[in-house]
Image (cartoon, rainbow, N blue to C red):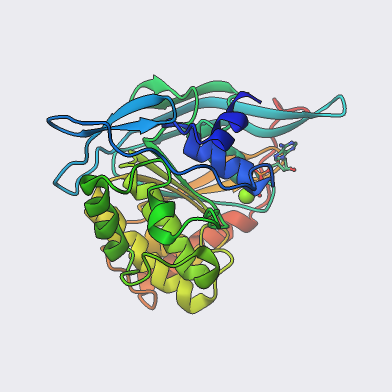
Length: 321
Ligand SMILES: Nc1ncnc2c1ncn2[C@@H]1O[C@H](COP(=O)(O)OP(=O)(O)O)[C@@H](O)[C@H]1O
Ligand SMILES: [Mg+2]
């Protein structure tokens, strides 16, 4: 593939970080890539840095406010072709997600949650239908879409701060300032020089959150990010995520198996059904933040979502496998 060789050589332009993380998860990217060259020249609103053979202008806003995005998904269908057969995974998904909304997808294993997020991220472009971010069809990965996976996918040969700035130049003072701000946001001050193997699962996942935030994403995509963590760490990270969302004004698409987590975090919960993945029910969670899990209304939402998950599937005569 065209991209992996470039990443190995350290050519790391904007969209490649997500691809590098993909390759790492499949074991294709094992070797450390070379460190990036120092800044070449200064610009008025940013610093021009060398990215492999390319120069990029970057600038970070002084205000910690990101541009948020609206998403429009219409008639999205997705099938996988394996051994001559087609497995239909997503069937006519239609959703509108407003700017700065926190939306959670919940549904049985295999219903297509990860597939949906990967399509929105631009990691899978083989689909039918409309997937637009701020009115523009998604055509590939980019820096304005941050992805946090269930596993942290940190580069083992880079420290915490180097992982955050993997495709930026850490010697650039603006990058450095932003990195230390984010390390503080995710409560990891003091661990800047630690390597991933020296971190607990929860700490590593916080680095992954900070790494995604450094790129000022308009959309933050999280695929069961806390699924492998213990209950205490999980609830702590839920609070960190809510802080980050409040401070940074970004649209969040979150996937979980956990109803409690969905109600605790989201403005809207979308219940998906499997084989093929369809939208079964949508819940608007009208509770103020921070939310109280023992509250009666909180419990009512939980029950409603549980009932929707367990309800028998509506027959869909249009669909044939
Ligand atoms: N690359 C792939 N090739 C073939 N089938 C796939 C691929 N990725 C996912 N699938 C299938 O698509 C369905 C949905 O997968 P996924 O989106 O991972 O579900 P979820 O995240 O909801 O558990 C599953 O049946 C899975 O086996
Ligand atoms: Mg999944």
